[in-house]
Length: 262
Image (cartoon, rainbow, N blue to C red; front, top):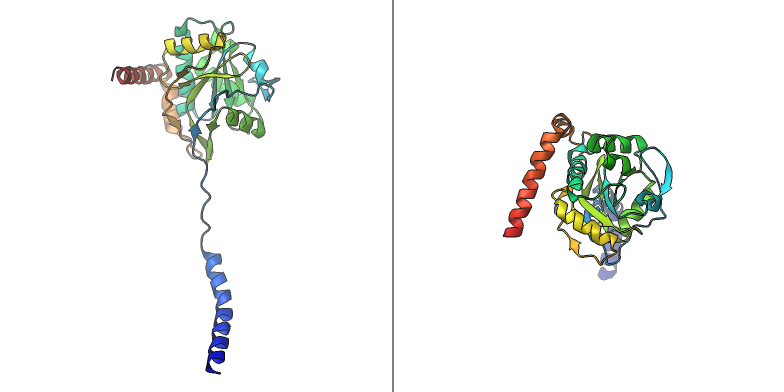
């Protein structure tokens, strides 16, 4: 009898406590979902899907294959609102490519795809003009592309490239992909610090459809800031673009050469 009364009392207590427990869990903050970390891990045989639909800096609709133009390509992903690192990386690439001795538009093309599907051709055009200039062969043959979110996702996934949205920008690897004419990945080089002879060798291997053999270590990542996106740094780069690129590029190349000797 006593046991039955105790059992009924315990049952009532659990029943009475249930709403309080539920309310307690309701006010606890939900554990945040962990976003994918930025990463670069292309699989063997990785290839950019050349049939994906994109638009160039002039707003012309085309496929990625048409943007490659039947040539080996230096390909990169970029955030068109990030002049601090993405712009600097493209500016360094533009300064390095002439040193390869290869002719843009004849021996290779520079192709860039924006990470933000909300960006339009105007932002792509501004990035190209700001870091490649105008009236030169590289700028004239380069394609700065924009695309729908599904297309960007397919392109990044195909090359084992993970970019993470952070505020108004992105965290993403800074890398140059060297592609064959058909979009197959031939080499990956660091966007900051690749030397002309490295880029030349990678493009020549891509033109011969040689097996991948040049995979530089890509350590640097572009960290997307909040809405300001590093406005102060962007202004400094805009004010002293050539000098900044020269100092930054020279420092990075010096470090890489010391690393090789070590």
